[in-house]
Image (cartoon, rainbow, N blue to C red; front, top):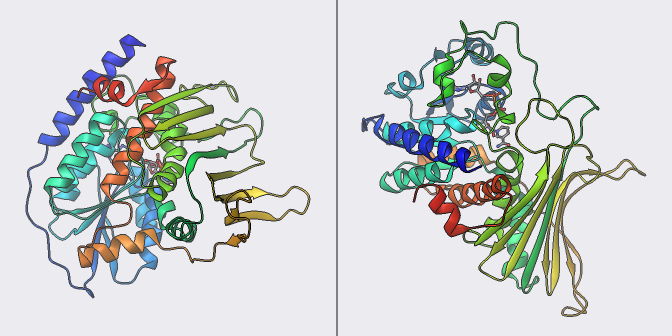
Length: 416
Ligand SMILES: NC(=O)c1ccc[n+]([C@@H]2O[C@H](COP(=O)([O-])OP(=O)(O)OC[C@H]3O[C@@H](n4cnc5c(N)ncnc54)[C@H](O)[C@@H]3O)[C@@H](O)[C@H]2O)c1
């Protein structure tokens, strides 16, 4: 572990320095009016990147001008969606385009910081997928770069745009929940036995000729092309943070945003590779505990070999409980139980009534596009991206060290 950690720290210092210095500010930002067309670029045109493009196609007055992806197959897939879109292998060519106002970043996690820093330095607004960065040091660098710029930055933590978030926030404001000392959350999925969660087939055209492998490695040690790792980057620590950066971060954004939580003071995480022993390095079975300075413990549990309880959060207050359930199926009736509910605590709200949330979901992408025009702060700003990224990385650091880690230790192990 000690050896791993040194390697990781060295790499972080190198990649952050490279990212910070790589791109000179071009100051080419256009001032947009409320009715102006937003012209977009996309870095990382894989599964999520093209989902984001579909979302922008539904929004009025937006246009995808260019995509950048290291894999030429993705250029064709983007052109199928947006005929005539310009396509580059190197994201810096996209950032050179004066007519791109805002950039969507949906590259693998270990490339987020580079793409974030280069985009902001190029004077473009930014929608960056979660988790904001692969490491705490990179999260620091991105937070600082965003603070020094006037760019609009939204992180892809869309759970804070849900109606359930708005309802729960209101119940807290109305004093219906009381003292919250404990929050429990969970996320569970399943696959047919023998098939690991997240594993994708490697297309036959995925070769050293069609992929700019060194650009994908992004500072990691050079090695021969590995199509499986390129397509299945989520399974490997060098490129991913596993399920805490893939999924827990969404739920932590909901919980931390809801309760306005600062950084955790400590994290513990246990688990392992228990579901499918494929080439993966990141655990598939996880139990995380976060301690917060506000006398609060948040737990998150996850499995990849049972999906019965879907995902959810329970905010356990002295005066009431907020429960958000998504995607869990009642096996008897087949009904999908989802939504957000409030249940009073008889000890402190004897006459209280249960409430079902009714607020409509917001549109995370449309909010970003509105903010690009209005220059307002979006609902998942860098600050939330930063706090949730640090929490996620604290959990992974604790898991890899096999011990509870304090915030102080996590920050110092990340080079601060
Ligand atoms: N907010 C959400 O709900 C949500 C959902 C899914 C994925 N995501 C996030 O989106 C990101 C992408 O996930 P995905 O499933 O689309 O992965 P993916 O592998 O399908 O797509 C990533 C794309 O990035 C390209 N790429 C790799 N290195 C690059 C580089 N240096 N420059 C340019 N392009 C590069 C790859 O060729 C690939 O096309 C991840 O951070 C993931 O966590 C978010």
